[in-house]
Image (cartoon, rainbow, N blue to C red; front, side, top):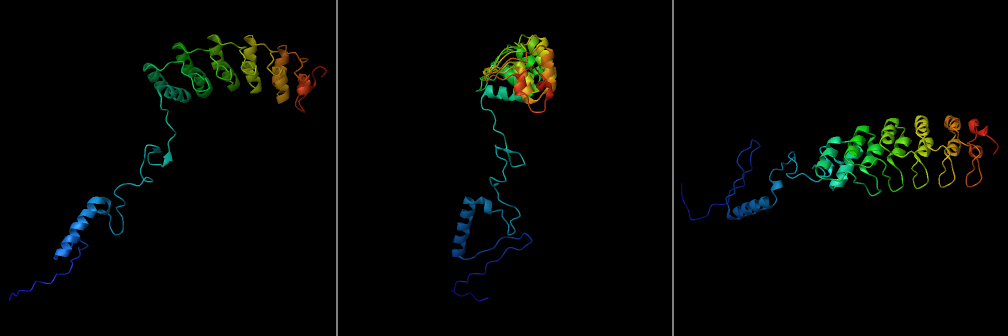
Length: 273
């Protein structure tokens, strides 16, 4: 072969085969510079190195939509509920859910058993209102939680047990010293809340425990008036059977009969209006 002084022409770029063969070969100095630039580019943008023509591999780093971040439930893309950020809030959250193990752990770590939320609802009150868990209520009380502590509206654990119809909770609370006649800011005792929720068994129990059947709230209403206004005939009969006075008048001069819902004869047949 004859050798001349000419430089050989740059050879063509050799494409890689589809069988995973060697990458392209570049023989020119300009091509070498391109290779160096390409390598540098891939070092800066490594996610492009693994992307094929059909993009089957996807991005090397998941996008925010694909990634299970700290605020998403893994694998669902569903936002997580905000987590409590203090030990006290974690305690109250666990009480609402009835999570005894977390409650015990929080108390072991020194969280006060009388911790309350921004509406002055104590852990024990929330155990009654939200969890409805008598064992949890007992657990908190045995560790020092007040049995009759009221919230910012003046409502006690017993008033929530009464409105929920939880006779088992009401019995426990009363046995531990809860007052059956403690009124909230509207002047309503647990008996009022049981009447408004049409909880016959609770009303009967509270009266048996000495609740004042003719107690008035700040508007001058009695439990009988509210039972008639709601159209709760059976409730009205129960209150009357326990001595409720049908002739008491509210601030507007109306009796329980005057307040009776249309069509409810149990109250319509009461004394003169």
